[in-house]
Length: 84
Image (cartoon, rainbow, N blue to C red; front, side, top):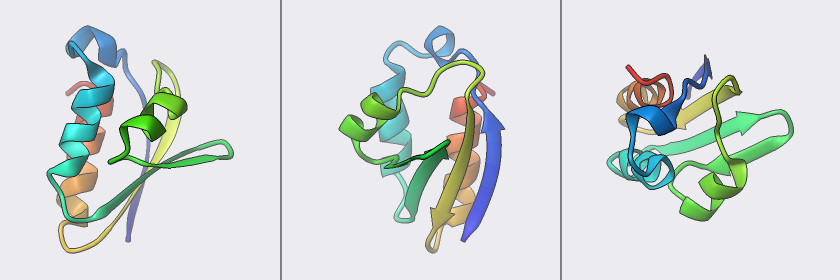
């Protein structure tokens, strides 16, 4: 299992449809990808989960990945959320 805390940048500036694009990034990996903030925990591969979670600028999120490609998955989700 890999875990990293990130602060979300303004993802709507860097992406046309950030919710759908985040799910697409997550779905490229076999690993389980979970986003956690406060008392909320969602599956990053669920568009409904991401919509309810609503990651926005300045939000602190823990990215948790588990599986064969967990490091790559964590790096890709971090890159997306911090707009690198």
